[in-house]
Each structure stands twice: as structure tokens, then as C-alpha cells.
Length: 386
Image (tube, rainbow, N blue to C red; front, side, top):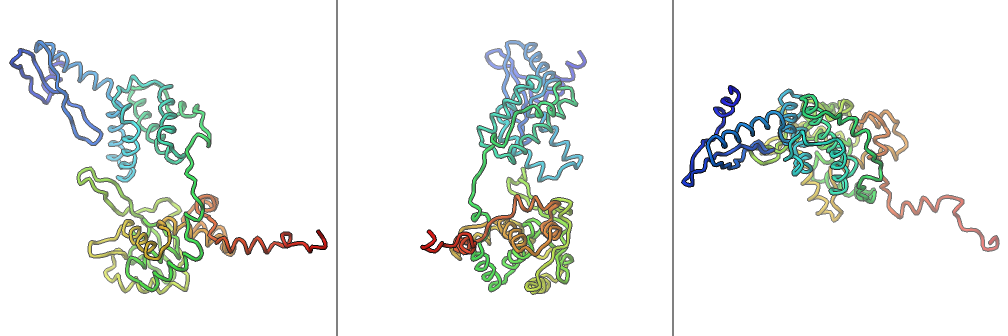
């Protein structure tokens, strides 16, 4: 009886009787964005309505919706500072995309085999790559582990996932020509010459990325104290997330890099030390190096400038990450840079990561033709020998 009174006293909406004699109220339902919508409920008598209110709150406490469990898990991680706001926002987006319908169900109605079928269907429905599926899987495992700790489910999601029959063929593969992921030899020369001839703060940043391979987020977070005599100290990076209040993307600097290997000193070639000198003169207050009248420049500033330069020079648009791939390919193709130096310059823990994800063929068809034709075994035989 005390519990019943507690539910009724804490009920936030009025109980009213209409002209038709029926009793009504609202029941609250929280949405993923934190807002609450009201659902109208009507009964013939006040007692029946109060029974419905009590039943709702009992069910909500003992068997919450999947949406509620996810929100509790994700909010708790953020409050305990286990994740950054960027990770919190990313996982919200993964969940919103895939659990829009299933999330309305009560958590205790979810069965082990059902979650496997659901995940497999998402791969097919959204043509997920292995990387995208990994994000969905991380969210699913996270909130279902939390649900198990709360006694809301009995199965182990870790064991369930381990039994899934997934191969490389299960995932969508986005096939792109290698030349679309890097600047070719000719394009690199054209763009770098343009940047050097027009050395404003935006172009100097992009040029610095070409000769150091810095991530765009690392570039945007450089401070004057990071500018060495012939190197850059990489200590931090930019992150971004969607601010639910402003409905805009919020950018901030995190005082740690993307990975442990991201803390490093990156060598700047002697031919481009003038870029460091020029940046020092442009940043005299000791704060962030790349600023404009609005304040610290974000990764978005560099990306948009690079797009405009590509359009101006008549070459296909490339991203800041394509510059990083170009830099990695230059290091490896030179044949003169040791494995450890490549790892350090790129901020990778293993050269295999660089080779697998960043090394691309930048040579033109004419150059490849010259190389192939230079192989002695492919030289034309004398007609008399045929």
C-alpha cells in the first residue's frame, strides 16, 4: 500500500474527470534525446486509472524499455568520465540509427537468439562495413552487459556474440580506386606549390600536414609551445560532438592524442622549416597556432579550405585524411625511411597499420608503364628469334 501511495504521489500529471464521466491522466515516456512525451490514458473509474498508473511505474522500474536501459548506461559512463562527450555522442547516433523500433520494447522481452538475428539484419539492411558493425556491436554489448548486471537479462551478450557466424564476406565493402584516396605525384606538386605561394594561416596548416602527416585533429590542437626547432610535439587532439542544446556540432580540444602512440615528436623536413618560422611570427600570444577572427580554427576550417583549393586547381576533391595517406605512401615508397621512423611520424604502434590502411599507389599510368617496360624480361624479342 505504501509503494502504491508513493507511485501516485510522485505521478507528475493531474488526474481529471471529463464531461463523459471517464477519468484521465498522462503517463510520461522519455525519449532518447532526454525529452519527455505524454501519453493520454482514460479509464471508467478513478480506481481503474490509479491501478493503471501504479502498474505503469511498477513495470517501468522492474522491466524498463530498451531505450531507457541504453540511456542509463550511456549517461552513467559520461558522468563517471569513462568516455568523452564525442564518444557519448557517437554511441547515441549508433543507437538511434539501429534501435529506433526495437528500443521501444521492454528489456525482459529480449531473447538471446533474437539479438543475433537483429544484428545480422542490420548488416544487410544498412550494408554495414566491418568498421560500422564494430560500432553497433560495441554499443549493443555495452548496454546489455549493464542490463545483465542489473538483473534485467540472463544471457551473456559476450558469449552470444562469440557464437555469431560472421566472415569478411558478411560485410559491405566500399571499393574505391587507390588513386582517389591519395594525391598523385603531379597533384601533390601542384597543391603544395599553390599552398607555398599563398601562405595564409589556412594554407600553412594544410602545407604542414603534407610534410608531417599530422591528423587534422592534431593540427587544429597545436600550440605555440609545440613548435620545436625542426620538429612538432604532438600532445593533444580535437574532438567533436553534437550538442543537444544548440543542435550544432561542438568542437573542443582533448589534452591527450587519439592513441598512446599519438604522443610524439614529428620531424619537419629542412625544406619546410620556414613554415614553422612563419607560424611563430603569426602566433605571438603563446596560444593555439591556428586561429582566425572567430578563435581557434577547427578541422572543418582546413577541410573546407582544401576542398576550395582542389576545385580552384581543377583536381578531384581530396580530404585531410587523404593528405595523411599521401604522406605515409611517400615515406614507404622512398625506401629510405626505417619502420620505426614511419611508425613514429604517423603515430602508429605497428607498421602493418600504416601499410594496410595508408599505403597507396600514387604513380601515374605513364610512370607505371615506364617501370613495367624497364623489366628486361618484357623487352621485345628480335624478329629472327620469334
